[in-house]
Image 1 (tube, protein in one colour):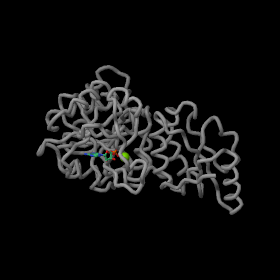
Image 2 (image 1 turned 90 degrees about the vertical axis):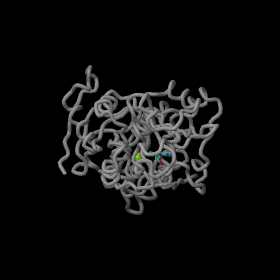
Image 3 (image 1 turned 180 degrees about the vertical axis):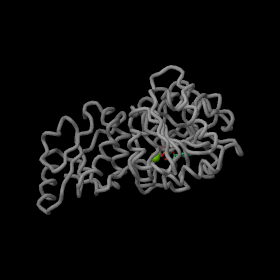
Length: 347
Ligand code: AMP
Ligand code: MG
C-alpha cells in the first residue's frame, strides 16, 4: 500500500483549508486510515462509524480485537450523537480538561458507532485532543474518528512521524507530519459511568488534577494489583517494550552500576535508561538520558523516543531507573512497569 506523508506546519492559521489536511480528511471519509499528531502521541485515525475503517486500524497495528479504541472528536456537540447521557461529573471534566489528554468513558447509544471500535462493549471512550492539526483533520472529515496510538501493537507509542513510519509505512494510507508531540504519554482514561469516577489508565492529566475538581476519584484496583483483571481491556497487554529484555531497578545508582558490571562480565552489552542528572555516573555500553528527573513532564515527553532508540543499538539487556509515582510520574511508571513486563529488581 502507498503511504502518503504530508508535512504540515501546525502553527499556521486556518489549517483546515490546507490541501494536505483536506486530502487526509478525504481519505478518512473514504474509510481509509491516516496517522496524525495529537498532544499526547501520534494516533492512527479511521471513521469510527465504519466497520471497514476500524478493521483497517486493527489490521495495520496488529491490535487484538478485544481492545476498544478511543473516539476522537473536535467539538463537544458531536458527543450527543453517540453517548446515551453525559453525567454531571463528566460535564465538569469536559469543561475543565477538553481539549486535552483526558479520555472519558460514557454509556453509548447503540447503532451509531462501529461495534468493532468499542469491541462490543456498552460503553465508549471519547476525547477531544488539544492539537491544532488533529482538530483540523477531524473537523474537515466531519466524522467521529477512532484513533489508537499509531504504533505496531506492543511497541512504544509514537511521538514523532518518524516513529509512525518505522512501524506502519506501507500499512496505512497516510501520515500527517506535524512535528513531535508534546505530553509524550497517552491520555488518562477515566470511567464516568459510575457515581465515583474511576481512573483506568494514568496519563497526561494527573490524579491530583482530577481530585481537585471531582473530590473523590478511585483507581482501578488492577493498576496496583496485577492479579486483578483491568477494567480497561488494553491494560492487560504487554506494551511499550524495547526489543532487548528491560528491567526496572528500584535502587540507588551504585547498585545499578554493580548490575551493569555483572552483566558485562557475562559478556553482555548493557544499556541503561537514566536522566540528565545521572547520565555521567554510569559506565555502561549504552547510556540514554530521558529528560530531567526533577521535571517529570520532560521524562514523559522523551520516554517513548528513548525506549525506541535502544532498538537501534546492540544492547542485550537494559536497566532502567524508577521514578516517584506522583503527578505525571504515575503515568511514566505505569508505562515503564509494562515495558519491563513487571520485572522490577530491588536492592
Ligand atoms: P490506545 O488507543 O492504544 O491509547 O488505548 C486506548 C485505551 O483505552 C485502551 O487501554 C483501551 O482498552 C481503553 N478503552 C477504550 N474504550 C474503552 C471502554 N469502553 N472501556 C474501558 N476502556 C476502554
Ligand atoms: Mg496504544
